[in-house]
Image 1: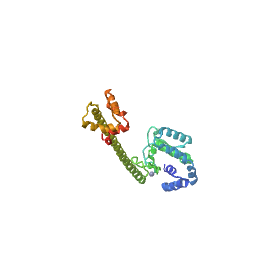
Image 2 (image 1 turned 90 degrees about the vertical axis):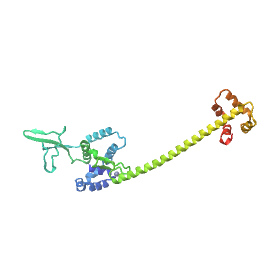
Image 3 (image 1 turned 180 degrees about the vertical axis):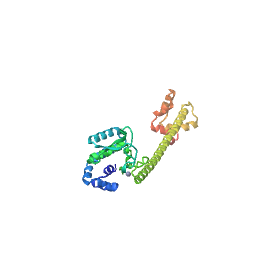
Image 4 (image 1 turned 90 degrees about the horizontal axis):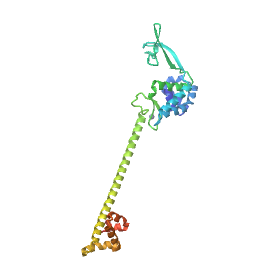
Length: 288
Ligand SMILES: [Zn+2]
């Protein structure tokens, strides 16, 4: 798995070999440079296949099916070996690694002896087959769950996590960088939100003021019409009416409004028919 991670994270064959030496130490000597160069030729293809699984809204079942089909075509090479049929120490292996009894692994009894025939994949195969073996083994055993991609957008490296609860970032550096960025984004969003709220408040205030002004103007218009409708006016009343009459160009205009009012046309409708200038006469600046 380390080999695969080094391959995917490197941007040149040389970087891949250096990274491998660093990560695997003497273990890396198992692979000679000719083998590694050949492995490098399948890097882009594998990167495309595996990166797709980590994309947002990935169609994982389709992608995995395609990947498994491809691996089947490349054909990792299985090898079978004979192991002890008990969970005992087995040479350098410690507890018997073959003793994982389940539907795919059973104990064989022949005479008085017990055996397990266990399958492993051959590691001495060409690079492409080897890398496919690594992937299919990880998928089969569930080890693939530990194969992750750093979520920090400026990193996006692959890594193997040891803790499934903290598997978003390849290291503390990326975690802090992502944290700082989201804190910054939150701040920007919040100040944007404050600005939006302030604008809303101003708009509401302006709307409210406009409605209030219209209500007052309508009230003045209503008083004016009531006064104008009287048959006889006192001198005081006339002095209230005259400035407005002058501004709206005399009685004929007012008579028209009064006629509409008599025809039971609602005051608001009459008001709507007034020109801007005439409405202005009853507005705050009109001093009506
Ligand atoms: Zn990272």
